[in-house]
Image (cartoon, rainbow, N blue to C red):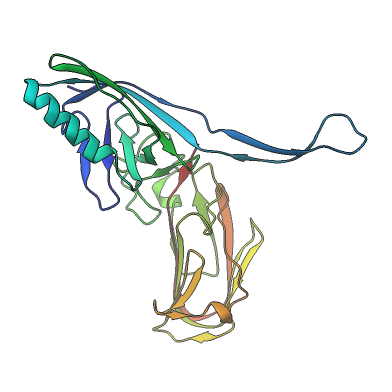
Amino acid sequence: MKGLDNFKIVTKSGEEYDMSGYFGVLVRSLVISSPQPIIETEKGEGSHGQIRLGKTWGPRLITAQCSWFAVDGPDVALLRNELFRKLMTLKEFYIVVDAEPGKRWKVEVASDWSPQKLGTYGEFALEFISHSPYSESIATSLTAKDFDQLGVWQVGQGLIEANDMQYRHTTSSFRIYNPGDATVDPRNMPLAITYRGASTNLEIRNVTTSDVWRYTGTTGSADRLAIVGTRSLKNDVVNVFRDTNRKLIRLAPGWNDIRITGASGSYSVEFDFRFYYL
């Protein structure tokens, strides 16, 4: 028994619990709120109104109205306790809605809830909070672009022709496509850029965002340089952050023009990240 708004819980370790298949719960409705606008202003001395300083997005609320259908009285208690164990955790988890199988929300339950029951039938409401205003793709940029693969890709992800969505390159000039709604900023979103090959004073430049990352050392043909989040690593273990210009590369929505200088011989560059959606 599945409603149109059925969803599954996915833990960070990869365990999955379908509300219908695992718990036997019918999700009657699931409502995802808009992001909360946070507008920064200040009062100008001697002037009317306010001065707008900027705007950011706050958290999102997701509300689910659910019903259960237990077999008997003991089954009611067992089901209730299992829901408590899986939902009322100290760690965030993901929910994936059946209607959007290629996206997930990182959430936690935002308030207490009390199942209302009549015999073996019960109803309850869940309020989740996503501290990020964005859902994220289940797949990453390096996942195979088989757009017919269920549970990985979906309509509404901003996808273009698979041949155009290339994230491994061997030339000094190429383009990286970010189909999401948000700029991927490695300070708060996972992003790994990996260079393999020889180089001297390697520079990676995103012309679109004007971001430049520069390494003042050298690498050999078998070496690997990686910008992983805010870290810069050589061969996965040596921290070379102090030998860089201490900058990062962001990826704007849409096309990003990338330029590589300082590379020599045969080399490759790959970008691994998720896509984020309002």
